[in-house]
Image (cartoon, rainbow, N blue to C red; front, side, top):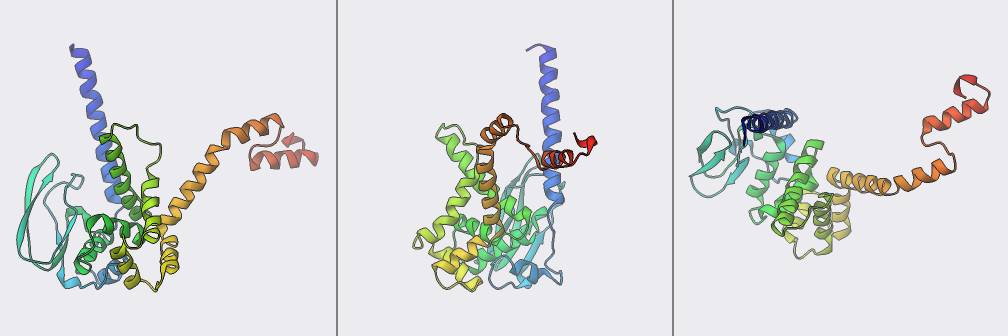
Length: 269
């Protein structure tokens, strides 16, 4: 490779690195950060269907590293004995944190109600496995950021699965999360631990009421909107072609211009 191409590749890589950093910082800035000693800590975390919230067992490990670094560990729930866990920090190597028993923690910039809610759920519902806890994340999401974070998990897992099978990724990864929510009521025996959480954390007592809880979630509403948009876009080209052929207005503004012009307002003709 000649020097010109090498410099071009290095410049492209440097540019991409700056963009990635900006995206990570934008993501971090969207987070609502809380501390265990905040007066409203319990109230904020309780909204995440997480069971009893005891702030006295909450811990925040604030690491002395830049805000935008990638961590392989966001939070934890440790209910057995003291232990240490080593995790990877991108561009900074490995770090070790000592965990005390019966604590629920968030690491570095992950001290959000969403992360604490997820980890308290592990603590209060120890039978709830990680993948099922992620499905409850979908249902318990309280903010657009929560919805985004929850959907990313299933989108990334779907993308990875397709790449492992050497398949071309589909245009949308939202279907996997949508299917997971549907399956909670379709196959209740397979999702009994999730249903147990939903029953305990809401007023739902039967399958229909559990479905209502899921349908009322912000994630399900987002998925419905996304499905409606996809349906709308599928027919957009055909509808536009038909409007042009019939010389019909394409937008509300076009309709208003035509109406004003019909009233003799020359500036709209």
